[in-house]
Image 1 (spheres, rainbow, N blue to C red):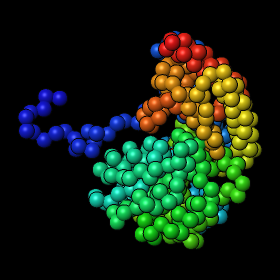
Image 2 (image 1 turned 180 degrees about the vertical axis):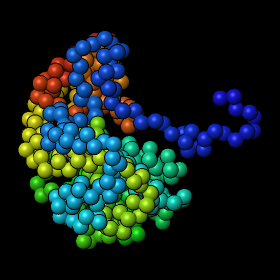
Image 3 (image 1 turned 135 degrees about the horizontal axis):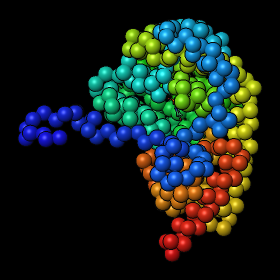
Image 4 (image 1 turned 90 degrees about the vertical axis):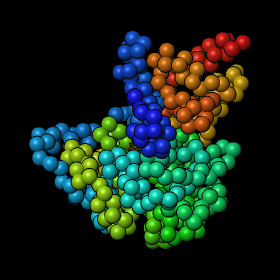
Length: 381
Ligand SMILES: *Cc1c(COP(=O)(O)O)cnc(C)c1O
């Protein structure tokens, strides 16, 4: 505001160019805007069964001690993670969501002039985090169905590459790279480069022979695996994530990390969620049922409406390609009380990313999608 000629701009160029992250529209916001009462949100890959009940119970139990600062070392939580993953506790780092860990990894290990390699159409947070740090990156091309390519990643590596970010499975495409390919990348990528495998959707993967990239830790030193509680554990609102990396790397990240980044309620809740196997099983079963239902419904819509397809997914969402304006279809669905995610900001103007809610939510979403397509086609003609 009121910037004098020749005076120094308020922010650096890379901050000026930064486009803020656009989250899924909150239900309360759509209520305010359209005065609708009955709204469903399938926009942020949240768990439709709610939070893990064990986590809620644990958070309730410790709420009465909220006057006390959290354990800065998050010892009980990290022990629970270490037990579950079969790793030494020194290899567990904690984050206020896994997004924070990705930021910490960049802040800890990247210096000016370093670059990153990502896949095209990968998680948008990587680009925001790198740009916020004033760093640049290369996007390795993906296949026609958005399949990540290890060869393309390797070809994108240059002498300045410091870190490779790979979401497996990937958001927003839902695509999955088999373990053997991740293993090949881990073995062939030059050893000084940090390989970050973001396994936010790991619990949903059904592919045969699937394993976490953690199994490669003996073969590759500079390997970081990140996990979140925002998806299968239903704790997106609580903000919790962890990373598994060599103890030395976790130690450096801990120098940068705010000591109380994981609050006391969340430390207790996330630890409890880890052992809530029944909830995880129910969540995955619901996801399978809803995916099958959604795919059948989309195939039916596609049989009578041209250009409706989807990308096979190993996650709790589907990327639906509509061959129409995703922005317009999204608006038509909002008017019907169904919040999905238009993908224009991801460079996919004709796609919608839709979370696999409960079967009831999926039925309602399919009806809204069909009506919206018909409304759009009627208006266009
Ligand atoms: C949802 C998601 C996350 C989770 O982020 P949080 O900060 O833990 O909520 C991380 N990576 C990918 C690829 C995701 O889709």
